[in-house]
Length: 268
Image: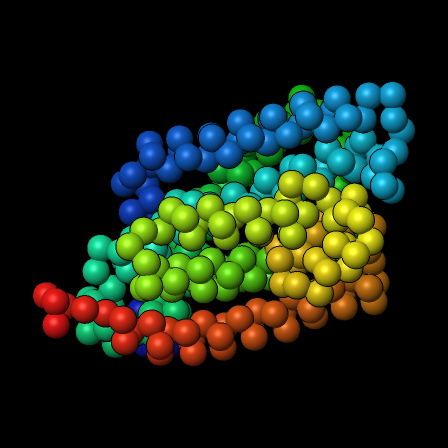
């Protein structure tokens, strides 16, 4: 039986899924745009690997898997989910949440996870189609690696939500979310390894990226999934993910307590 305090957040997750289905054309178009980006990245790296057996420790088969897993991780919390948070702040509907017996941060997490279910299903379908036409994909086969990989994927979703939530709260001090979104996306894609694996970075930048939370979004699940990190090292990377999840969650609570002071109703 679901506890009453938890049941209301489950209801929010279900409502989020229903809203996603209600606007399914917009959702699918946004998703297909990301998939086209995946195809472009695939063609780019295919050209780079022409005549090369290995680059920075990555074989071509590993790079193909890297691209697919990166797409899956990023699509699990897309712009569609992110905009649902920022729009509440920009249009003022956040006021309704202040009147409800729910915590704003937990409510947004519930809604995000609700959308993630549909985003995850569509991602699996598109990745499956991509895998049919792609050969030499290297994915984990043993149960232990698969378990660690799955747990790191869940952790990366929570970590990305924490970063997205913090950037969304900045909208309390701005009149638009687009600049914040593009800045957050650029920084996250670069330092998480979504654009280029961290192994390709110069030493100083790779070391810097590894101590920041962004690498836990893509680099950690991908390197675990490809078997490039295993055992104790894999557990350490997952532990780092959760340290950042807790810290960013607490930072989000503190920032929310400051952000609500920026709310203005009818000029008052």
